[in-house]
Amino acid sequence: MVHSPGVLEHLAQGNDASRPHIEMGFAVSTVFGLVPFLAGCAVIGLISLALKFYQRHHF
Image (cartoon, rainbow, N blue to C red; front, top):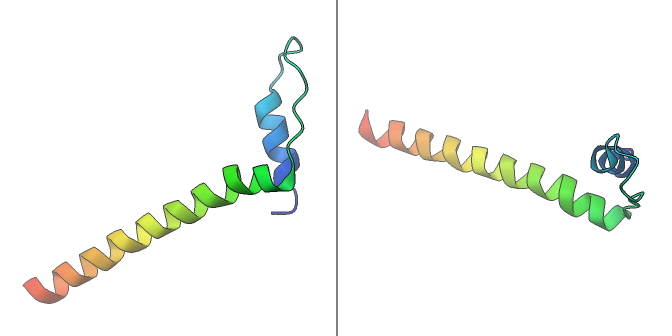
């Protein structure tokens, strides 16, 4: 997680030299890196809870 600002900057920059260099702060990297990861984990957790509830009450 410590290296995520550099990784996101590298991915956003790409290999195109005509684009300006992008500098991202830690807060921006957190919003675009950690928040989608946590949201995905929450969705997977909700799906698993729904399946568990469905199996418990229908079988």
